[in-house]
Image (tube, rainbow, N blue to C red; front, side, top):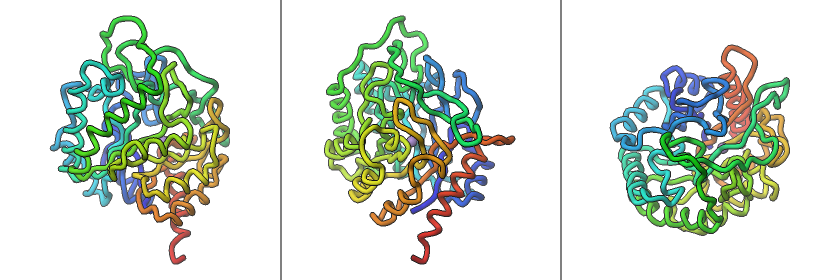
Length: 356
Ligand SMILES: [Mn+2]
């Protein structure tokens, strides 16, 4: 198993690459969508939560990530002595009508195929994604973690209908007409995922890229009145069985899985890691379940993270583990301190397997 760090788009700098290296990471996961553009956020580096209008504006619908910029990013990461393991999340501007089954769906499928082919050419092996209409929304911020550290959680359901021009908690069309989008049925959403996988996975296989699906965060049956796909652990199995392509993988988020109301987290980790379907792992800790869970420091929640690492090790997982989110620590660099703490903890867990 390998230690990695996830960096938001505006944090893809040589200084942060050096930070990751110094903390013992060997791999990076990069976000190329700028969640911090035009939104209201507590801090520039903390994970976004946003407002009823989401995190902010999506990217340019006519400008896909180019082969040159993907290659340059991979080279810059390697120049810092690290490997670029994955890109995390498509830009809503590039694929919103796949999620919404809208009029631009065919164009957006071509967009995704193009991005995956370019990733393969650029030597980036994994694409993490979240197939969700409402995306990561409905979370609150508070001094929930140990010592009053700011972290993220949920304080009840959030089913305010979504306005037109918005998907995946970002605005892709600021000029959209007033009103709210129709509510999809769970069957429609599963069918959209099925069609997407059937069309895109053959291209991913050919390109040498694997697609890794994140479970719903937060894992509620509905958010903003829209259905969710993977809001209980057993629904991940449905994703695997939908398409047996080896490129159909999971962005295995221990925190989101632990927030679900069903299942034992250790059985869940065992069930999926033994099927060798984990693209990469998001590791964090949490207290309580939806709709009232809170994110905690990695050693402080209800999950025995060291036991989770032991199960992954026993089942032969050899991929990358990143800390996912962490509470913000009281100092001049709250995000970095939180991440350094989580990285150190995971590093110690991995170290304990050596010579055993
Ligand atoms: Mn996650």
